[in-house]
View 1: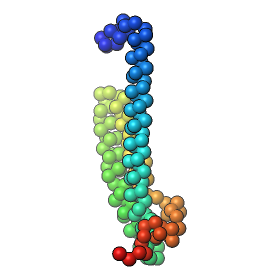
View 2: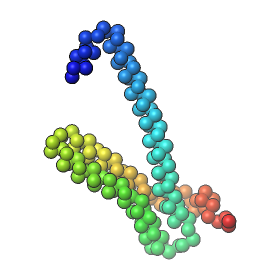
View 3: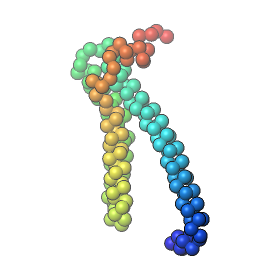
View 4: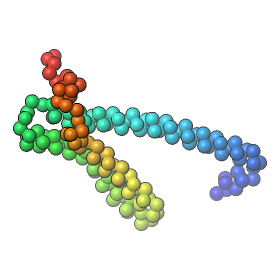
Length: 143
């Protein structure tokens, strides 16, 4: 808290310049962080949907077999986010005994990880047609 007292003793113009510099640094850093996170999330979403698209476009037409395999792949893709959510929630509840803010922040992160896990389980109706998927994934081409 001594640093805040020291800054408050500086002239107003220097305090304003320091505040502006801090705001600029936070704004620039936040923008770069959002761009990085958005690129990472879109790449993860492509990987998550690849398996669902591949199963939807497969020539297997036995619905039960198709749904069973699709569920297994989706559950496997979502498992690590589910484990992260459980771990973060448990740790936040334990740490919340000492600092209540940790519990609130941890539960928000736990919800984030649960939504990430949910993104690995797309609904087949949200995917394009079988022909378009085959074209996109190049399933009919021979190497």
